[in-house]
Image (tube, rainbow, N blue to C red; front, side, top):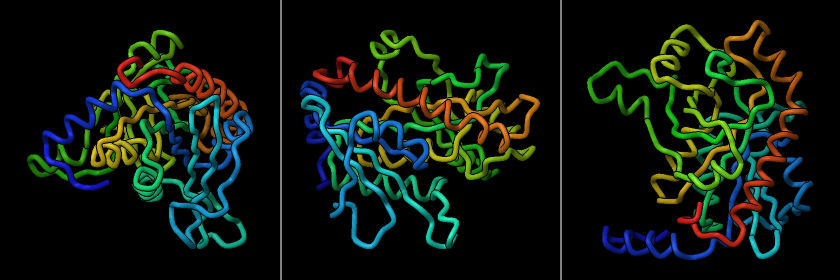
Length: 265
């Protein structure tokens, strides 16, 4: 993206809101989360990726009616060796979000994935939430003003018509780089009034804001933070079923987006 003056940016943003959405990019951390969506829309893996040479990032592409759909994943971590572990967390998510926006010029980003959630906030296993806003819970900088930077509160793109049509639950998402939750993490998550917890969302929001691309978040609940089962055990137990629910909701979102402008959402 080239530089713009403030007036130019406003004109570009106003024009983009009136133009039918033509390109959607899904940013998804894990292959297991992405595969049901890839299968649903018959997407093909890109062999000559525009995201960069010699990188582990995986890009799928295809058309749904006249809507271009991309799914980008950070791929496998080479340092994990034979295990070939998904590159989860904020750093890979930031990198693929930046590269995807630069290369693919999407009208809107969708960060889709699984999450933990609080049952006391009304969450159940298999629920798919539309995120209202995002924060970080593990950037602890106890210095005036830096503390607010650490929390990094950002709004998701507002989609009141989509929310009404799909009748989704809505909540705040808190992001950190650990699957488990330390006592300090828990205190900040509760203080920030978050319903959901993941490992990518706030990082995606940060990059999207920098590059002025609207982003929405679909998060499906695999584990209950305040439940009675160990997080890792519950996550693995529910992953397959919950990613299927995520695909169903993502498909409904794509069908709703088709033929609409950003202002219609």
